[in-house]
Image (tube, rainbow, N blue to C red; front, side):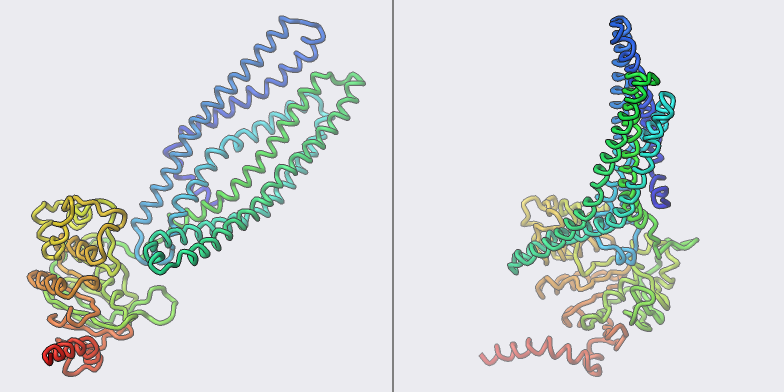
Length: 584
């Protein structure tokens, strides 16, 4: 219930609509409870005496009560819809805002499919709980107590029948709710799995078709789809027992009331009209108990969704601005002092171990290493996408934890290994780097990234739509656009995380030439090809999360076996090819 109370705080902007809806439900209940009493007079006096004025009077009152109940019901639907949709909008906005503040470490703990489910399905469950559950939540207790009161007023002895029947029904429904509760958790987990497979398949649809794996992926989807179907069947197999339990108890109570009520009519202690009204109140009381059980079922599912939403909203970010942050980065000097890092505390081997490295401001540094050497991990510590587990990372002579995070990341441009473009035009994507950039500034960055050559061939130039995720451009074109976008930031530290792997060597050479003109920018280049870093001022060799060697191309080629092996494997073929060409 703590989860539910926490989530309901987001109902505050909709409190007025919610309060009006509750008052309308109360008015509707009063109108409906008056109808059986008015009907008693019609049956006991109006019909036997053929008192038509009285019949019309009582009938008119019943019509007015029914009309008032109808109007209040319609008005309730309007205000409840406003309250529930406003509540859902507030929850989605709160979750989305919270996700935008997540660190990389937070995103490592949640799968993207789970976050999507928590923002859509779980919020919809909470929204429906308000829209569909508010009416029975308010109406049931009112009808229950008013019905019991009116029934006791009509005949106390007969009221004992449903006073006994109501708790029996309540116990049966409580057992059903207790059994269904854990099944909702399983069902929501299955929804996460379905969303995960769908998201993965849609993202990788080209690879699936290229490898002719449609049948395999259909089987994978069928597996998680069956899992969801089985979870839903198990859940509703028990949930639907509500109605049979209600009907058994209700009709048993009606039979008993008719049996004993008939006896009271024969003895003259009760009239036919009173028994008719009594049955109406009994049905309302039983229906109220049934609605309460439905509320508990809905509440059970809502609690599961509320817990999942609260986990998103209360997820603690590990990175935060200091009390008095530095907002200006003086230069691009980068230094690692005895830095160690692991992705999760308490896990096994550290990704980085005791890294000591100093990169002078304005220099060009290449980083080489095998797969799993933690090259990307190392550079992600510079803009503070993660914090070092031990040691410190300095930029401009200050620990990165002393800077305002937004100022630090503005001063550090990073082209990540996975290139990402957004829906919209080329211009829209490039303006992410600098929203104030004019046409000439954008074109200058495109020329430096060698993106101008294909942009000019586009039908609408910079205003060409890229499609969702940049599907209308190739991998190499996507890389060059991401480089241009980063150059528009005019950062003090520029990081390329294997960002030219999809372009040809000639284009890469032109990009390197353009980057060499950036005099006051520290350039850190992670690469697989030695040719990408041969001209760097410094080359760093990482091995198994440690700095193996540091030096220039000539120094490493003369004295480091790993670099020599890389050089021989990559450049030997080119030399052989060149010699072979000469022989011809």
